Image 1 (spheres, helix red, strand yellow):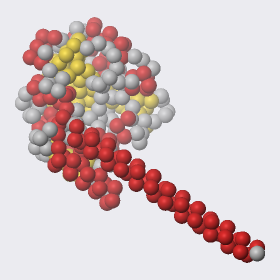
Image 2 (cartoon, rainbow, N blue to C red):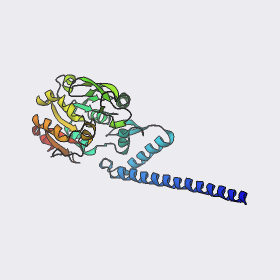
Image 3 (cartoon, rainbow, N blue to C red):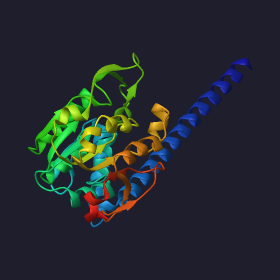
Image 4 (tube, rainbow, N blue to C red):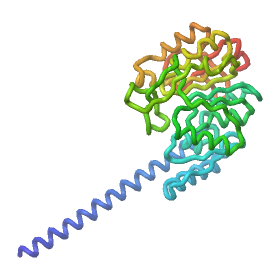
Length: 306
């Protein structure tokens, strides 16, 4: 009788184990299905994909399959005619794989504003999406990126298109110093307290730009945008930066304990007003509330965009 009972218990354990595996498999399939639907919705609804939604969706799926099954990056198209190498360990390249112009409204502004030969500074270049797009329209690009992994990918993406960029391997700050920078956070890497990350060089924009006139400047540095702007006050007061695009979300509060109103106060002092972009590439006046990226400029410098 005891052996029969043990046999029955063993059978029950096997059944329970099989049920657990089946349940895990069902959850895995359900999660994959949800992920696939989200991917399809994101690609299908992105304004940059209008007129080529089906093709872009097929490319996005191929990118995911290649990355997950083969563990290999994918050569993707960005902008009108450029290419980049995209991989699943880079959120910036994932966004580019889903849409050839990831930040659609913002880049509509730059397409209208930049001309051949204009100086464009990409602060927080990451893998170089903005740098590649700016080079495509003929701008002279300065890419600023302190992370060596991203610098390597940035260089490769520029070389893929035979584009040139002046690369500053540093962080831009309010004063020249040595900083600690987080690691292995992908696009979320940022300045941290001393000793909590690897050492990087912090430099002032005014020192590096050496009096040159900048047509446009994108600043995406996970909440440290105010420090970059303070280091560029000489250029701003001298009206040598026409238009800035600034990350304007909760990162300033999360990473540095400050509101965006503090940066707005600095910009107000030098006569730069805040705007948000429309899908048509126009600029609309806005306040200091957090949300999507904002643009900052003197009104007379962007009259054609208003």
